Amino acid sequence: MAIREEALPFAVPVFIAAAAFGAAGMFVAAALSALAGLCVCAFFRDPERRLPGNESLLVSPADGVVCQVVRDGGSSKVAVFMSVFNVHVNRAPFGGRVEAAMYNPGKFLAAWNDKASSDNERLRYTIGTDHGNIEVVQIAGLIARRIVPFVTVGSSVERGQRIGLIRFGSRVELTVPSGGEILVSAGEKVKAGVTPVARWEAHS
Image 1 (tube, helix red, strand yellow):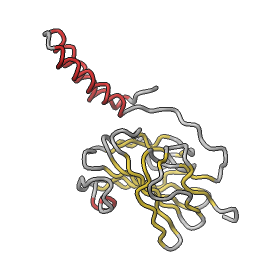
Image 2 (image 1 turned 135 degrees about the vertical axis):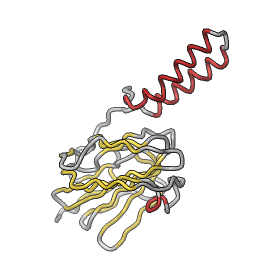
Image 3 (image 1 turned 180 degrees about the vertical axis):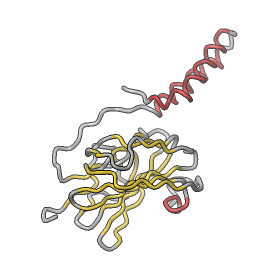
Image 4 (image 1 turned 180 degrees about the horizontal axis):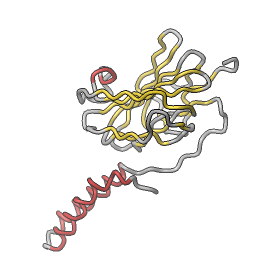
């Protein structure tokens, strides 16, 4: 399984420390350091994903558990909580063009807290599609301190394409406009690029 290059600044020093402990005969410390390095690599894993064949489906932008589904008038929002054990590479729910990317610095509340949506550090993408604009918001959590984007304004993205990652625990929200039917409920486990979370209605 591939490991993101973003792991290097974190993993390399830990493995160097493990080697140094081993050379000094401090084998317990060496083993613990090596284990920590492997955990870091596991966090930055980046598996390939197989998209569902139905082109009307919007896929989950993140691995994790659906922590909130909100229907507000015509639009709907699905929030996914990612623990440190989940893959943290985020993906485009649907193909389109990145129309805007707005970064907001903020707090680092626990990502499962609904106030994290408005108070935490976050990066909001607006993706224009043939069915209207969708929004994907990467929200930093209690441990996460860095959102890493992979795409820029003006970029074309395909459904399931990698668009960024958040380091060490976080939350991702998808907002779908009128014409999108939500297919998941709170408490369901989802996988980025694999699990259908919404679909466009046939008349859209």
